[in-house]
Length: 134
Image (cartoon, rainbow, N blue to C red; front, side, top):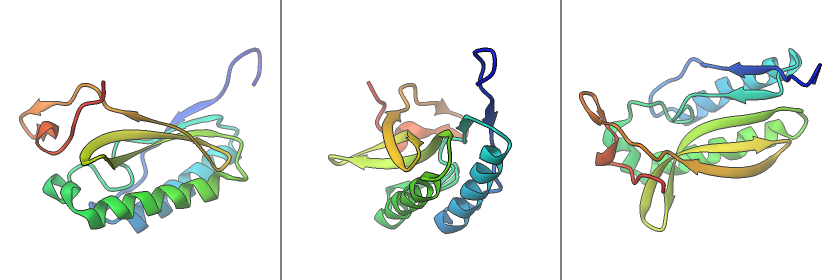
């Protein structure tokens, strides 16, 4: 921190729809590179672990588990990095699916924030698969 400011970055890795392994690798690479540049807050897109356009694949347990496995890999990779990161993923909780941002730092999951206002127009029909946070 310099003069009360911190370096933040909005990162947009190359993603493949429903390819959690590839997406995780891209996220970790960008997170490490950003930390190397002194970034202290790294924000990734929503659904960056799965890709945004998975449609009804979001309802498949295989994709949900792939996102959780990816999140664990990002957590493990972040243990040595001095950066807070927000990473998007679908999360199943008590039978309801949420569009969440995972907040993590130094290998610790600090919190999960569900998206509150879900779009439901045009090509954006998140209410079909997801429950809004409250």
